[in-house]
Image 1 (cartoon, rainbow, N blue to C red):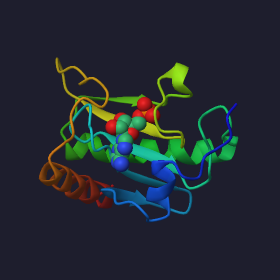
Image 2 (cartoon, rainbow, N blue to C red):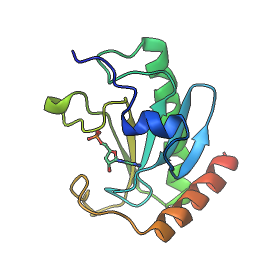
Image 3 (cartoon, rainbow, N blue to C red):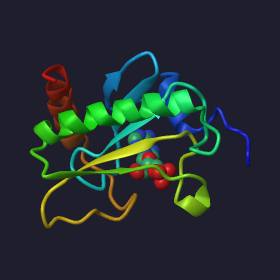
Image 4 (cartoon, rainbow, N blue to C red):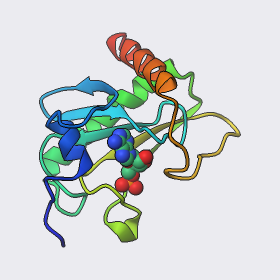
Amino acid sequence: MTAYDPNNIFAKILRGEFPCYKVYEDDHVIAFLDIMPRTPGHTLVIPKAPARNILDIAQEDFAHVARGAHKIAQAAKQAFQADGMTIAQYSEASGGQVVFHLHMHVMPRHDNVGLLPAASRKEDPKVLEDNATKLIAALAAL
Ligand code: AMP
C-alpha cells in the first residue's frame, strides 16, 4: 500500500494550515463539516494519528474514530431532526476514497430524501456556519 502522505488536505487541517468548520475535538480525533455535503450536517471524523485508511490504522485509533462518530451521530440527530444516519468509511481509490487520511462520514438522513452524489456541490459558507453552530450546541447538550 502507498505510504501515508503528510501533505494531504486533512493533515493540513489537523495542523491548522487549512481552515475547516470544526465541531468537535478531543485528544484523539477532530470532527468538521464536509464542505461538499451529501446531506445537511454531513460531518467527517478523523484521527489525530496519521493513517491512510482502515488498512493501516491501529485498532485503538480506529476505535477512537468510531467513538467520535457515535457522538457526532447522537448530536446530529438532535441538531438536524434526523430520522436516520448513514455512516461510511472508504478505503483506497478502489473503495471510493479520495482524501487519504482516514475519515468516517456521518450523514444525517431524512425519510424519503436521497444522498446527493459525492462532491457534487460546494455548500454556501453561511449554511455551513449555521450547521456547525447547531451541531456544536447539540454536542454541548449531550
Ligand atoms: P472520501 O471519498 O471518503 O475520501 O471523501 C472525501 C470527502 O472529503 C468528500 O466528501 C469531500 O466533500 C470532503 N472534502 C474534501 N475537501 C474537504 C475540505 N477541505 N473540508 C471538508 N471536507 C472536504
